[in-house]
Image (tube, rainbow over all chains, first blue to last red; front, top):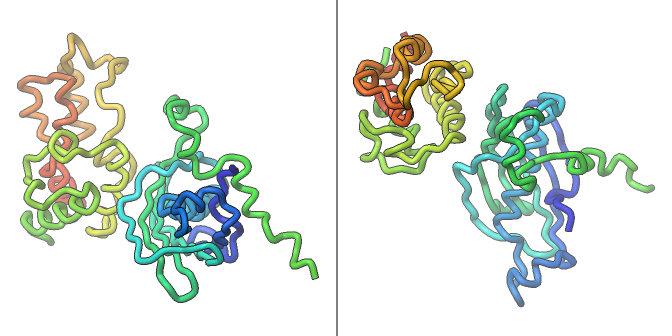
Length: 159
Length: 128
């Protein structure tokens, strides 16, 4: 499985806000276990999608100079759920951005329906920071391939 | 100009939000790490929230200095912070109660310098 929990960006205002799309599909293996007969997008993966949206927003603000690491989710509320066929829109707003890290608020909606909202804090680590080796790679909001998401859709609409 | 009580109330609210603790736990003498369970990452979150709640700017390392009296700093001997180290602490972190720490300056107790009252004192200097 590839660790992409957003499909593409639909809006990107550097240093301010970004909106991404996640199309929930029954082709996703885990939905058959979560739960059998009642497939819903796991909340933890929604947080990951929100963090990928907000983390790329923060990373881009500093031209990807830092490794942006998901450090803390001070607050998250799930109001509803998302099922196969739903299109989640993650709307992130950059609240703080400084040398040490940053924070975002993000909402997840399907149509008009609010599914989840969260505050997320990230820290910056330089590539030569000794702490870097102690960190699980999955904590990285972006490394190499994840930035491919920024180019999704650039092939045009195929028409 | 906010009174000391007003500052304390706002600092309490800030820590309740950042650390998920109850407001009655956030007493002036409570230590952030020992009593309130703060971890290193929480300090950045606390800084963000204080900046917002008090409309102040907190440059890196001013409220929570990094690398205080580490083993290779030359300010540590026999598990205690040396006199030079104490002098450095007074400069780096004047809003902390260094006098109380200096009575028995165990390196292992350094994190106890970070108290609720320390944050209140720092904020008060920024609001002047």
